[in-house]
Image 1 (cartoon, rainbow, N blue to C red):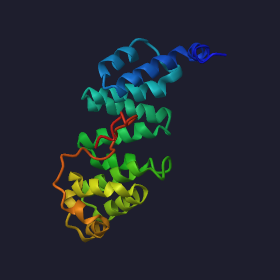
Image 2 (spheres, one colour):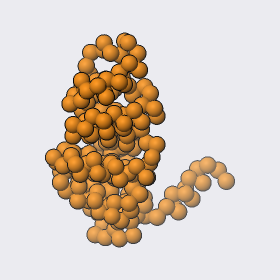
Image 3 (cartoon, rainbow, N blue to C red):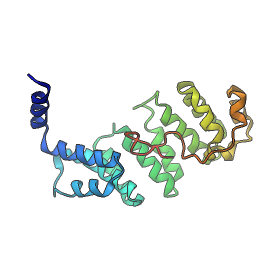
Image 4 (cartoon, helix red, strand yellow):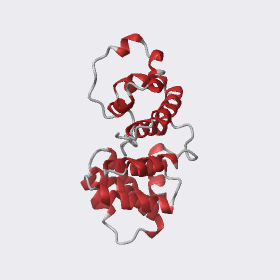
Length: 207
């Protein structure tokens, strides 16, 4: 069977709801939340795919700046499917930016059993513990992240979220592992390494 024929058969076998949700996710990855919103609102009921719909709708609302509404949808997505790692990261991102830092930390801590070796998760936790002025916990998470992704030391050296603990001896223990040239780099306008770009990372471990 020719590749074109196989592709056509594959398209026919995709559930119509899944196809719509795939398209909505594609629009989000392209940075087009309005187009995603139109697709997600094109049907009155998404019962059979409610967990994924709630995640994508929450992501859409986040992209549109309606963080409180996004929180509600992301919480629903996680109630329906607690294993949605990206939804958990995004929920923490929204909680942090709606002045609920303690809840954001709880969100991320709850993801550890799902993705125990995620450097992105550990880096975000390090940032949030730093903002909560808990240097020891921040350093534990940061060290784990750097073991998984050693090159992120350059980002950590410029990370604004670490300013509250920048002079703490626990944090300074990590600095000697950085190449000397990194320590003298000018500060960059950084949004954090990975805080939610989900799906590229389109959800946006935007930090």
